[in-house]
Image 1: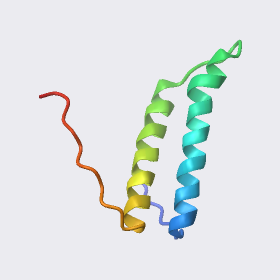
Image 2: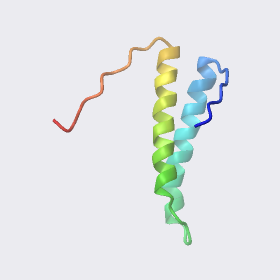
Image 3: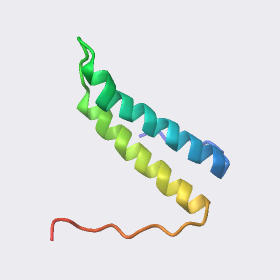
Length: 74
């Protein structure tokens, strides 16, 4: 994987995360209703992972403690 560095302010990072989440919602729930739409589950999964990473970075940049992950398998 190629790594790319980008400098953003916490506010820019928060906005980017919000915009990405909105776009992912549209792809998953709105676009699926249009005739001829071909879903791409791999892209949706990657998008969800990316949004989670952006939200974690935003929380760290704003000094917000991250919630502990709950393991649902136990």
